[in-house]
Length: 280
Image (cartoon, rainbow, N blue to C red; front, top):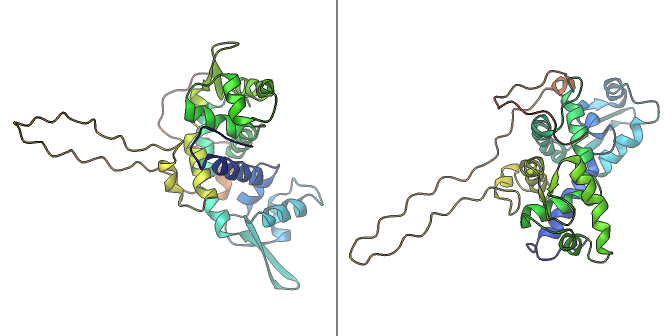
C-alpha cells in the first residue's frame, strides 16, 4: 500500500496501526483480553469467564493472541499452565476506554443501552473496513481531497475508480463527508474525533509511551507557535510569552473487568449528543 505526498514515515505508521487493529478486531479477541484482566488464569478458569464460546473456539483464539504478543502462556508444570497479559498487552488496554468514549459520542444510538464491550466491537468494525485507516490518514493530512487524487495516494497501482467503494462505505459509516458526486471528500466530525484513538494506537505500535499520541504528526495536537511580532528599532523588544505546556491525552481510570460488560454507560460531563452518528 504505497503512500505518496505525505510525511515520510506515514506508510510505516499506517501499516503498524492497521496491524494492531487486525490483532484485536477478530471476534471475541477483546473479550478474551478483558477476561484475562487480573492474575493469570488456568485454561479452565478462562473458559468459565468466556462461557459463550463453544468447545474448540477458545483455544485457537487464545493461541492467536499469544502469537501476536498480547497474551503469554506460562507452563509452571506439565499439569499447571496459566495465561495472562504480556507487558505489551497490558500497555494496550488503556486504548479501550478511549474507543468507548468515542463511540458514546459519535456512534448512532442503539435501541437499547449497549455494554462498553459492544461499543468497542462496533467501533473496531468501522475502523477495519478495507482501506479505511489509509483513507482517514490521508483526509486528516490533506483536509479535502478529490476521489481521483485520493486514489493516486491510496491505491496508485489500481484503476482510480476503485477508490469509490471504500469511500462510499466510509461515507455511509459516517466517518467521511462530501457535498455530492464529483465534490472533494473530508473527514466528518466523527472521523476527526478518532484522532486520540488512532494517535494512541500509533504510539503503542511504535513502542512509545501512550502520551506521545499528543505529538503525533497527523493525529496529535502540536503546540501553537506565537505569531511573529514586527521589530521596532526604537523600542526594546518584549520578551516572548512562555508557550503553554503540550497537551497530553487524559486516559480514563482503568476499568474493572466487569465494567466493560455492564450496560451502565460511564458518566462524563458533556453536551447532549444529537440522534444519529456513524452507523453500527
